[in-house]
Image: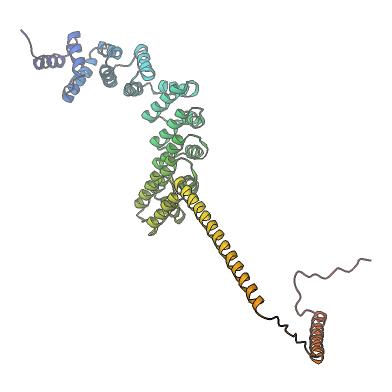
Length: 412
């Protein structure tokens, strides 16, 4: 007789409640853990945990699913192993470690790392992560950083290795370290100093933006952080970094006058629209409004940009050349007309001179007495001026100027 799936599930549950650890029962329970129904998954997991207290074989049968081709089987096997009380042996631990580093799906790598930690092998996992961060290649270090972030595992040894990732040669490692510092919210002075150095010195805009966002996640505010964020909002070359700096200043609730002026300056003076949008949002987050004349300033700058475009410059040059050509032509016409007028006037004068008789006008010379009196007056004025100048020069100054120092007496 054909037995329905529901009746089969009910029969398996009844057998498991009677602590029957036959393979067919365990296999059915493992299949039920991969069901789409959450209630069926939880029930099957609880029954497997119950059976594991009666037989160690349950752990090995579940661990076989770690080799399954389907990712859902491997994922659910990790989750079930976490709840089974039976301790792990070396083979299962090695398989979980292989999944943590080599599985092609990230959530299974995370589940395998979590399983190792939950099963009491945290020290082993810690040493493995530190070793990968020190000696691994680029992808291995990125993977190790992701595991550290997910497991929230930060110790003294891990911190020293984590700080070295801020100065790694690969952008992906530095970016993951900066992002991880924000997720961990590790408000350590060395971590904050490392983030500030990445904002200031890193050549990748992605790393700079991640470091700025990490400062917002950590939430520490001091003078050094504010100065670096203000400088980044004004002078960083990449628009993404400037936008992040504007938003983080608002997220940290920094409403000083210089910060507000910087945000308003970015709103009106920045050439990138994303930075303008970020500065506007930052001002709104701080409960402030932009300047009243901000729209007018933006309109003026847009008009200046249009005037400074290539087409407008060429048009102005062409217009200037055409006006110069017109003025030259007009000047030529005016000069010709003047020459014609002068020629006509000279001809008219010559005709008038010919028609009129020549009359010599007599020049009138001044009287000698008047000439002599004028010379005497000029001489007397010159003498008076000379006397006034000489008397003024002989006067001693009433005030002693600071820059005039008396000459020191000669030392005998």
